Image (cartoon, rainbow, N blue to C red):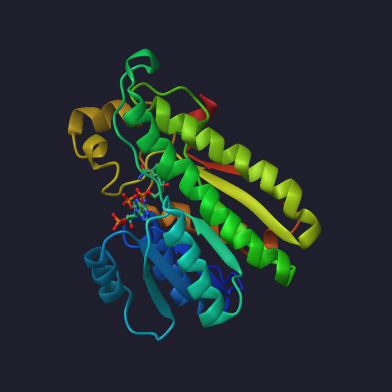
Length: 254
Ligand SMILES: NC(=O)c1ccc[n+]([C@@H]2O[C@H](COP(=O)([O-])OP(=O)(O)OC[C@H]3O[C@@H](n4cnc5c(N)ncnc54)[C@H](OP(=O)(O)O)[C@@H]3O)[C@@H](O)[C@H]2O)c1
């Protein structure tokens, strides 16, 4: 649990992909901070497993939705408006990656799958949230990017392109929404120990080669990501917008 109280009591927060990894850790912390938390994901069984971990505070809502399907996203925001009448914070957490060959050898199918979830999905959810936040004249949107969006990373090229797009979406939306008291920011972690990255940290040789390039000498745990995201979701960041906070143990400074 974070040692910091972010003043998020009774805030209505949607975390996309909150059924595992970073999203689940964020949901757990936000419930401890007495927020009302909505998580979405594609698979009922993952949502049910997450709900059993998150406990019965009465402040958790789960919604089955694929964020790259417009009809799912429209229905999800419709339900949120009906159930809560507002949305204070959106955390765009869904992300997926496939190991991809170099760009000349990447197929359109591989390209589209990665762009669809990471970029189109973030656009659809940001659009849905921004419409509500504009009406209420307040809100916070925080997207989980990646350092792969800032440096060309072998085998993660298309994922990096999608994350770079997410960071520009953050800037564009921030500029448009500032007049409505909505701040839009991103957090870009290096490797975090979750299921998503297990093929890398799960192999001892690969793990050793990764941490050689991280001054902190380790990869991140999900708890390392929570405070930066909650700061960006809190009143403390009210004059920060369009920014990406890099959370990488120093890996991009060397
Ligand atoms: N882990 C890392 O090393 C790392 C590093 C930098 C950045 N990130 C970023 O951090 C974010 C979270 O990563 P993670 O490691 O926590 O991932 P994860 O453990 O794989 O969790 C992904 C979550 O998103 C859901 N999801 C996936 N595709 C979805 C879709 N199309 N629609 C709705 N929900 C979907 C999954 O549930 P279902 O499968 O049930 O849909 C799950 O709840 C991602 O944006 C990732 O790019 C991760």
